[in-house]
Length: 275
Ligand SMILES: C[S@@+](CC[C@H](N)C(=O)[O-])C[C@H]1O[C@@H](n2cnc3c(N)ncnc32)[C@H](O)[C@@H]1O
Image 1 (cartoon, rainbow, N blue to C red):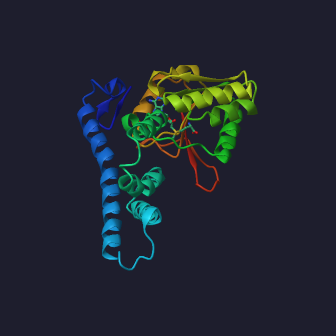
Image 2 (tube, rainbow, N blue to C red):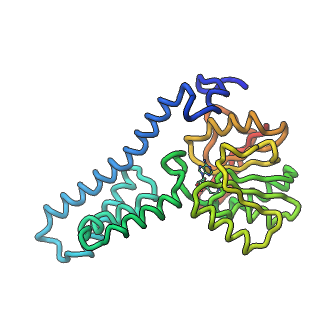
Image 3 (cartoon, rainbow, N blue to C red):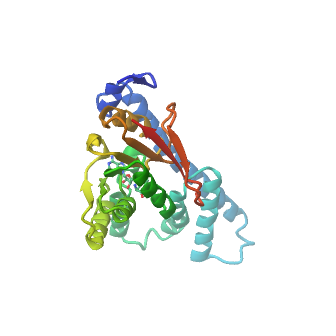
């Protein structure tokens, strides 16, 4: 294994606890967690200041005004570069603040618990939940056929759509998903049971613990943050000639063998790396 970004491959594979780059990555992660919240506060504060200064001219009040306030803050947040994940939070924040006293404490706790069980990996891995669309699933099934893959894994399989689509499109292909967000994993297991596809499987496992040597085609749709480390893992474990595919997030400083433009509304690109 060579070096990447100035670190030895084995060092990065040992991450997070014992790697020399841990401190830098940890500080980076804290900064990334704080910046969105700073933008939320800024956009809410701007709208609140506007509402207070115009309060005599605004013809409505109460919950409607609070919802409009949230909507305006969500728009400002988007302009400031916040992802769509923050839109519902921004919209509901003024209402939650205003009706804080009448909403029972357990409701916040329950909402927080549900969010945590869905967005389990957002904070620790910087990988939120967004899903591969149908056009991209079809493109992946075509690639699996073209590269004669017999075994496929989706690293971070979400609700299981990709695995189930590939399993349905080729009964000879073993399609597997690994996922650790508890509610999301549960949903994929339920979908698999309902689909009755014998060649689809979901395992509650970290993407870092999956043995990639078992697969002809490895797919991931993660975020920019884990890509360098994931590529090193792929290089270390995947067999020569097998295919590593990343949706939307290229491996920095590594030339893909091929880039597939899916041609969907999102302008999805699949980056293909041959091991
Ligand atoms: C962007 S979503 C993609 C979902 C699915 N692959 C798809 O394309 O529809 C990324 C998924 O990776 C999961 N994930 C992130 N880090 C993970 C980890 N360390 N182990 C297992 N799953 C992880 C997240 O919970 C999330 O469901």
